[in-house]
Image (tube, rainbow, N blue to C red; front, top):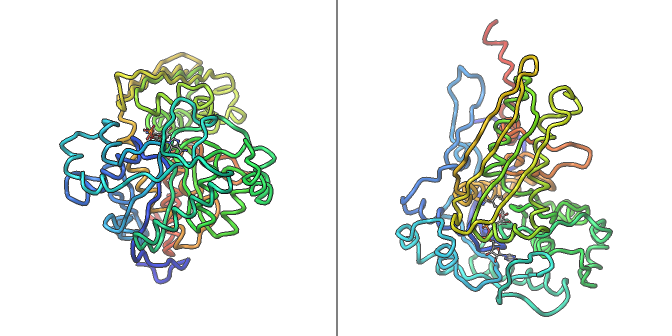
Length: 439
Ligand SMILES: NC(=O)c1ccc[n+]([C@@H]2O[C@H](COP(=O)([O-])OP(=O)(O)OC[C@H]3O[C@@H](n4cnc5c(N)ncnc54)[C@H](O)[C@@H]3O)[C@@H](O)[C@H]2O)c1
């Protein structure tokens, strides 16, 4: 263990409340999974906080503790869950409808999941078009609704005797919006809430309520949400961490594995065509062109950032990149993604790579939710505020400082995450230089 931590980390004592807008496929797979792991019914595969180790010091030292033994994280037994949805289904019913996990497994965690009843949601059909439900706060201005959410948060905190809370957006993808004048300053934003400004999305009302209540906020969908000066300022003012956007699972995860490899070997790219079929509620919402546009933006952005066509025009200047998502109900949550990648090598000779990923969206997303909750709580106890770039590892469109470009290469993201943990605990950062081994 290090002689002295770089930063003061408050202990992870007491109960950590996890508040989730959106009791759907991802969030119920996450909650059911945590309950299953607690009972020894399954393993937390895909979760760094539960399974990964971190190398410390030199390669000759043999020090590789588990991350969860290296930094003080909340334990799975310390988590309590709550959330909001436009439907009244309990987490058990929602998980059953989502059909991600087997009924035989769900029945073994029925009791805790049935106790999670969604609170009334803040919803606007202008932002999410293909679904509508009865469990909504339908009176008052946007500011009144923010206050009702703050009241929900307070109630939850009291009822479960939480020492700390984290909020993570697992609700549907909202339609595409750019930052508007109302998002520029906190004062404008609060005025806008009072005047029901149409540019303020429900996800921003949740984020505002969270930050005003002293709760860190993570965004698992591609919506703009906290990516606005007003909410960034609020996070900084309240000393709270925020992060987003859009969980990096499935096809984009694959893209950020392969593209850095092609670039590392200076192989060129003529085109990358990605298409998907999926049949869950997420797929249904993404049939709406507005929601798809939000998703398309985050999915398209990764290749440009990784391949840097401006630096390597002869390899990447004119590559054609298209992403399609097709709603196909028979598949449910078992998405199928195809990629056709047209690359070229020595003297421009063409080659192709085909990927057919038969993945399970929520199975890939659930461990990311767990890690984000635990790391956001760690960040909160460490006093880290504003954008948590070290959590880019988890996102398709990582939030970043305005003067920087986002880092999409998953291996650089992982190094950054682990070096941040080393930095917290006063350990040497690992540069992989290693000349000393050959002195
Ligand atoms: N599964 C993945 O791999 C993955 C990857 C990246 C991003 N995401 C995003 O995560 C989110 C959740 O995905 P999912 O598969 O669980 O979708 P889902 O449709 O099963 O669940 C979303 C839930 O949010 C609810 N909802 C919609 N608007 C709401 C509001 N304003 N307040 C409260 N609840 C609201 C819906 O009723 C629904 O139950 C989506 O935005 C999706 O795009 C998922």
